[in-house]
Structure formats: C-alpha cells, structure tokens
Image 1 (cartoon, rainbow, N blue to C red):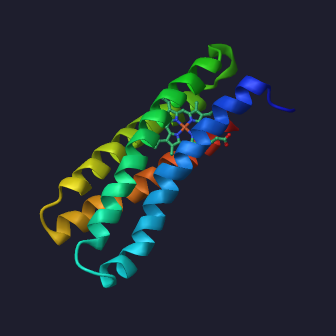
Image 2: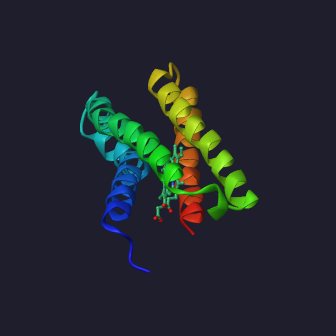
Length: 134
Ligand code: HEM
C-alpha cells in the first residue's frame, strides 16, 4: 500500500535524521584514523562539526518518534510491538547518554568505551525502528 503524503513526510524526516545520527557516527569513526594523520586537533575539529549536525538530528528523531507513536491506534498494536517500542525508547536514551559521555571522555579508554556503546546503541535503535515499521 502506498503511504499517504503526511506519513511519507513523517517517516522520511525520521529516516533522514536516523541516517545522520547513526550513519554519521559510523562514517566519522571510519574517518578518524585519516583525520588524526592529517594533523593534531583535526579529528577534534571534525567531531565538533559533526556534533552540530548530530544533536539536532537526535532531537528530530525524538520529536518524529513521538509523532510516529501518535499515528498508531492502540487497536493496531500488539503486546510484542509495545515491548519492542519500550526497548527502543531505552536504547534511544542510552544512545544519547553514551554519545554525550563520549564527548566528555577524559581518557582514551573512556573514549573507546562510550564511543562503542554509542555506535552500537544507535544501530540497535535503527534496527528496532525497522521492526516497528513492520
Ligand atoms: C536514535 C534514535 C532513533 C533512531 C535511529 C530511529 C530509527 C528508526 C528507523 C530506521 C525506523 C524505520 C522507518 C521505516 O522503515 O519506515 C523507525 C521507525 C519508528 N520509530 Fe524510530 N528511531 C529513533 C528514535 C525513536 C523514538 C525516540 C521513538 C519513539 C518515541 C521512535 C518510534 C518509532 C516508531 C513508532 C517507528 C515506526 C514508524 C511507522 O511505521 O510509522 N523512534 N525509527
């Protein structure tokens, strides 16, 4: 079935923001070795520039996520769907918290741990979203 214009706009905005939040983290992680090789501080400059894109994208994900939920009537959703939604909300919160802690890391070990949790939880939120979409 073809989506309505409003559904198409809602899901396109949600997916575009997910592409920036999730895909951007993986892309930046892949670029970091080259950026470090390009000079001291270059990777940090790139990370700060990415943060100016990624945090607005995260806010858009939460807002359009709430909009997504509001479009489902209770009769349309199963208990399994509600459980997946609940897990997704926890994973989204972890994704935001770990990304923030990653920016505050004081040691390379903290940087690696929070970066790995941030990337993994962001990817998990995306996968759970695909299941919610059906
Ligand atoms: C890191 C944050 C998030 C990511 C990466 C993400 C990613 C996605 C993706 C990729 C989809 C699948 C779209 C499709 O295949 O059509 C989706 C759907 C969905 N997301 Fe999210 N999402 C995030 C945050 C949220 C939040 C905070 C909520 C709820 C408060 C939410 C609720 C939903 C719902 C209900 C759907 C199904 C939409 C539909 O079928 O109409 N998402 N999400």
